[in-house]
Length: 375
Image 1 (cartoon, rainbow, N blue to C red):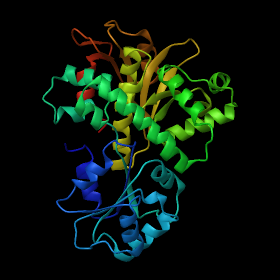
Image 2: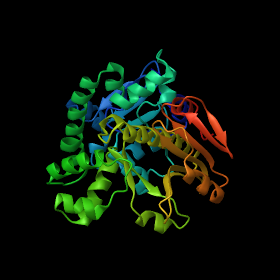
Image 3: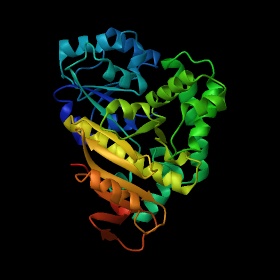
Image 4: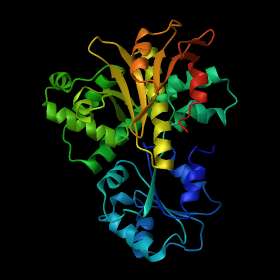
C-alpha cells in the first residue's frame, strides 16, 4: 500500500531532514521503511538501537536512516541538528513521531531551516480507491464503520475495530500522554473523550464539559489541547474575518478515528468529511507552504454550514453534509452571497442523482471525496 505523501517525502529527503508526524498506528513506520529499497531503522525505545544512536554508529552506506521515538532523548533537537549540520543528507535522515514532533514544529528553535514537516493522516476515500477493489459505496461504508486507521480498515470487521480501538486509546493515554504531560486524572480525560464522541458536530462548551467533569474550565481547555497534540481530536472553529473572535467562539471537535464516533451515522458522516477535508488541507500546507484552516459557518439567526476551507486567508470551499436529504439547504445560499469565491457543495450519502441550483452543487459523498483536491 503506497501512501499519498510517499513521493513528496522521497523528494524532500534529498534536500532536508524530514520530520514525519501523525496519530499513533497511522502507518508512519511502515511508510518510512518502504520509501527506499534499503534503510536503517533505529527505535529509541530499544536498548540496542539507543546505544547505536548515542554512539553514532549506524551504517552510512544505506539509502535512508529512520529515527523513531527520538523525542524521548533529552535535547534530541540539538542532537539531530548536529548530525545534520555535520553529515547533511548523506544518507537522508527521517524522524518519526507524534505529539513531540508537533511541538517541535511550533516551537521554532535550532532546527529552523533544516527540515520539512509532514503529517500522515488515516486512510481516506481517495487513498483507498488506489488500492481497493471495492466499490466506492463500500469504501465509504467501511470507513464509517471501522475508521481509516490501516490495521482495523484492512481487517474490515467492526468487532476487531472495537478491540483495536480500546488498546489504541489505552496506549495513547497511559504512554504518550504521560510522556508529554504530567496528568494525574486520566480517568476524567477518558470520560471527556466519551462525552466528545457523542457530541461530534455540536459546538462544545468548555464550561458545560467542566460541569460534567467537576473540574475547572481552564483544566478542560488544557485537556482538549493535550488530546489535540496527541492526534486524538482536532478542532473546527467558527469562521470570522476577525481572528480573535473566531478563536474565542465555541469550537466543534472531530476525531481522527471516525469509527470512534458514537453520535449516530449522521455524526460519523460529518466526522469523516471533516477529517478528509482536514487531511487534504494539511497535505497542501505540508507540500506547498500555504496557510490553511478549516472552519464552520454560523450566524446570529442560527443559519449554519458545516465546513469552510480557507487557504492563505481566502475562503475556497463550502461544504454542507447530509445523510439522505436531497433538498438544498437554504443556509448555503445565504452564505454564498457573502463568500462568492468559496465553491459551495452539498454532499449527500444516499443521493439518487446529482443536482445544481444557483451555482450550488449537490453531489454524492463518495464522488465528492474521491475527487477532493484544493490544488
